[in-house]
Length: 392
Image 1 (cartoon, one colour):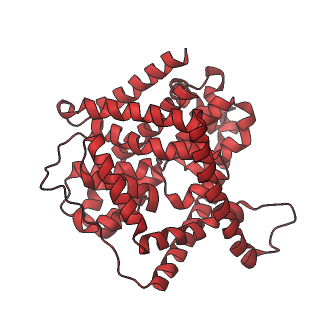
Image 2 (spheres, helix red, strand yellow):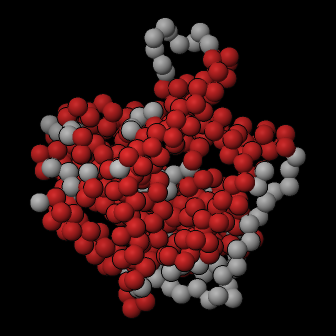
């Protein structure tokens, strides 16, 4: 039965992308089918094999060590602030982002990260039917972040068509920054974080290829990566501050969104006898069902999905942590993979603002297709969840 639902889910996701396509005649089916198959294979390897278990353990082990190192710095500054046996969310989940941000900066400065991103991007361009720039951007987004990635290609922004710009923005919204992966791993199982990181990359290309098909002229497909000339210690200071800003911003957003959601839920419960999240749960329940969530669990799952869309993934992950005892292990896996992306309303402003700071005209273009961008990125999350539902 789960395979029938998976096929229906796949057809629904691709069908919804097809309905929003700006040029249906130009859709290239071969790369789309190939990438869906790759998603299925990679998901099966990562979740159902010993090899995948080893990869996940190594990945999780690395981040566990990084979080330990980060804890030493946090303890030096904030030691004694927490009560014995308690672990404040800000200290244990958000502040380690500062240390991981520094490591990313060092790898950038030593030109290790740009080399990896360019190499993987070139390989992906052979598979996805898109340009080298789009492929590089998809990989880079997952490593340096959805706003920072545009700095690395700022020289080329002014020359990009809206079609290419949409694909690049869609990749940025469909992935997550490596700097906050450790934070996710403290809330959901590392194997689902790793799986989502990998298959979302292909999912972004799949949905963009359907919603926004085009052909890149070989003469225009030039990859120029902008690198800022800084001393080592200038770079360290910049990445330390950037990481701290991310931690503070995420913390502030959590305070605002969690408080707002609690207030709205209370008002709806008082007036209608049902919370706002429960209403959203019923709206999103059919989507959860085609992702492979049992119908009995679909309303609660739908509420978490909707929370992620209207707030952010951190708020939704906290909700999942609080009620995961009500879900089967398969549902937890499917929802966890859905949550690992930046597909939410606030990301429209973040990406449009990042591009506008580098090129005002292109930033305005991103703002114009912002809702279509969120639509596509949400379909990527649903597609990844459907694929994982097949192998779990």
